[in-house]
Each structure stands twice: as C-alpha cells, then as structure tokens.
Amino acid sequence: MSRIDAAAPAVIVQDSFWLLLAALLLLDANGVLLLFLCAAATHEAGHYLVLRLCGGRFLCLQLSAAGAVMRYRAADRPAKRLCIAAAGPAASFAAAALAAGAQAYAFAGANVLLGLFNLLPVAPLDGGTMLACALSPLGAAGGRLCRAVSVAAAAALAAAGAALAAAGYGVGVLGMGCLLLLQQKNLQKRAKGDTMKTYSGKIA
Image (cartoon, one colour):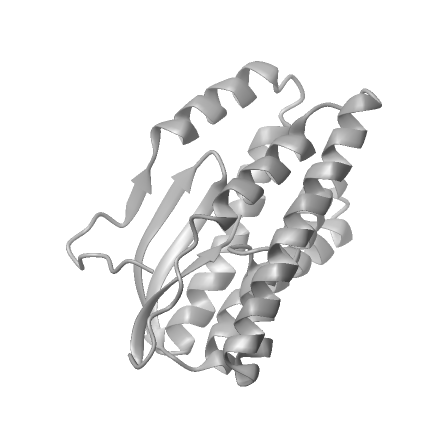
C-alpha cells in the first residue's frame, strides 16, 4: 500500500466521482441521493471517531466512482484495525435505529443498505478488512484465503447484479460488482516488517 505524504490534501476527489455524482443527480427524482450522502457522512464519522480513539492518524479521504476510501496510519495491530473497520457499519446501524425511532424510515433504510454493503467480505470494503484482520494469525495462508474470498464475493456480487439487470432492476449492483472485481488486481500487498503502516479502508 503506497504511503501518502503528510502534506497531501485531506480530501482527494477523482474525476470519476464528479461524473458519477452528475449522473446520479440527473437520475435522482426522489431525493434519495441526499439521504445516502448523509448516511455516508455518518458512516465516515464512525470510522474517524474510532480511528482517533485507537491512536491512529487520518491521512486523507479519496472519493471516486467506486466510493470513499479512508487512508490512515496506525500501529500494525489487527484488533485495532478490525475495530476501525467495524466502526463504520456500527455507526450506520446505530443511525438506522435512531432514524427508525424517529419514523425517518427512508434515512434508516439508506443506513442499513450502506452498512450491509460494507460488510461484504470484499477488499477494500470494511468486511474485507475485518476478514483480513481475523485471518492475520494464519500468516501467508490467511492472506491467500482472504484474497480468494474477496475475489469470489466480488464475482458473486457482479453475477447477482447481472441477474438483476436482466430482470429489469437496473445496472447499479452490476456496476458496483464489476468495479470491485477490477479493484482486486490493483490491491497492493502490505509490506512486512514495518510496524507503522498506511492502510486503506473502503467506507462508503
């Protein structure tokens, strides 16, 4: 995982993000996009809060068509990285419960969907990070197993998206599955023997 200069901007927005946002704004006739943006902000806040509690340092937030990726520096302790990764979905589900209690069911649904999606065992989603942390005691074998599960889950998501698209339910799931599949070959292996590293976590 490439290191990031400490002087880098806190938020890096790629051109693909603006293209996706423009397309979604054109297609969003019911205001759903705003709900998901607010849900994503809640998700991010959960990650950031636990990151600081765990003594990590936020480096930047990268926004692209594939979503948001937080890059941070923290001690190479799987338990802490697992807590940081789990904090996003936990914040999403907590927000969903509060929203449902206030009868804001649309916002509750957006948070539930975002939390569940991020729990998929696909790198660099939160679920993929959590799986990697859980398998880290297995060493290289755990890493290979984690990558195999990640590729299989991304392929399954793309296949499910293709089935939904064929049934007339749109291409959103298919597109996300394909993006995650493409990302698998670009993920870099963590360097060994360095106790302070830069990590990425998909958080929205």
